[in-house]
Amino acid sequence: MQIIFANTKNISCALVLLVTLSEPANGSTASFKLDAPRAAGAQSPAATRTTPIFIFHADEFWLNLHHFLYVLGRSANKTRDSSREAVVHAPADQDQGLAGLKPKEQQIWREAVAAYAAGPSQKDLIFDDPLAEITAALARAGDEKSLVNTGVDARIAQVLTQAAPIYRKVWWTKHRAANRAWKAAMQELVKQHGPKVLDFITNAYRLEWPVAGYDVHVSACMHQWDTQVLQALREQARKLNVPVPANLSHGLIFFTAGEAVRHIFPDHVPYAYKFRVWERGLSNVREALEQSWKPYLEGDGTRDEAFAELIKRLGRAKPESKNQGTRRE
Image (cartoon, rainbow, N blue to C red; front, side, top):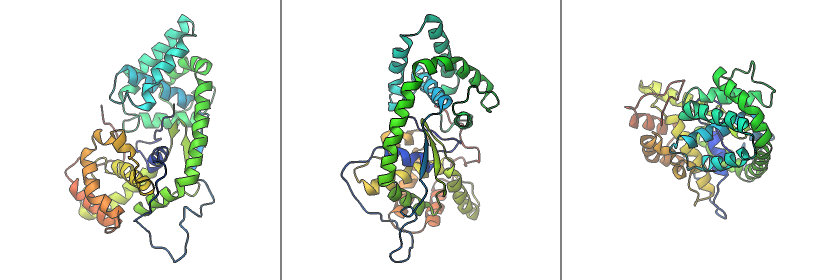
C-alpha cells in the first residue's frame, strides 16, 4: 500500500510527477512540442543533472501508521475515495492482522481507527488543514521512539502512541517491505523517464527544480514546488489587479504533469482524470486549463500570457490564499 501525500497544504508537481510516472502506457513514444530556447546542441538541464530528481525515504514508522489509520477511517466513513487503490484493500489487511491479536489489543486498535474516522479521516489529506502540517511533522519524526516534542497535534499523537505497539507488531514489517519494493520500482521509472518529464514541467513553468532534488517519503511525498507556481501566478494577477482564483495552482500542477507524461506516452490517462480529481471542486479549473493552458503547452503563446488568460477565465472564483485548503467532502 503506497500512498502519496504533500507535506504542505499545497499539492505539488513532485507528487503528480511520481504518480504519473508510476502508470505509463507501455511501448509508446512521442516528442515534446514545448521547447525552451537553447543553444544548438545543448543538452537539457535534466539530462545533465548530477544530483537525483527525488530522494526516497521508505522506513518512516509514524507516517505509515498515520496513513494506515487514515485510510481505514476513510473506509469506515464510506467516503467517495473508498474504492481507490490506496483505500480499498486496507480493511482486508486490517482484518487479517486483527485475527492474530488478543481481544484487548483488538479493542485498542479499533478505538484508534474510530478516532481517525471521527476526526482526521473526515478531511482531505491534501487539501484540508491541518493534515498537511501533521504529515510533515510525522515525516520528521521518522522512527523515533515517541512523538514527544515532534510538533504533532497532541490528540493525534495520543492516538498514534496507543496504536503504535500493535502496528509495529502486526503490520509494519510488511508495509515497510512494500514501501522498499515500491521505492526500487519508482527509482527505475524515474531513471528511465524522469529527465524528459522533468524537462517538460520545468520548461512549462519556466521554473528551476531544486538542485538537491525533492525528498519523497513513502508512503508520502514531501515537497513545496506549488509555492513557486503560485508566486508566478500572483505576479500576473497583480498586473490584472485581481486575486489568484482558488485552486488554480493545484489544477495547473495536476494538468501539466499529466500532459508531460502523455507527451511521452500518448495513451496515458492522466491521474487527475483517471481518479476523478477534477470532481473534487476543480471542474471549472479543468475547463479553463483545457482552453487556455493546453494550447500553451502545445507551443501557442507564452507562459505569462496563458497565466493571464487563466486568471481572467476564473476571475469570479474565490481567490487562493497562502493557506490553501479547508475543502470538505
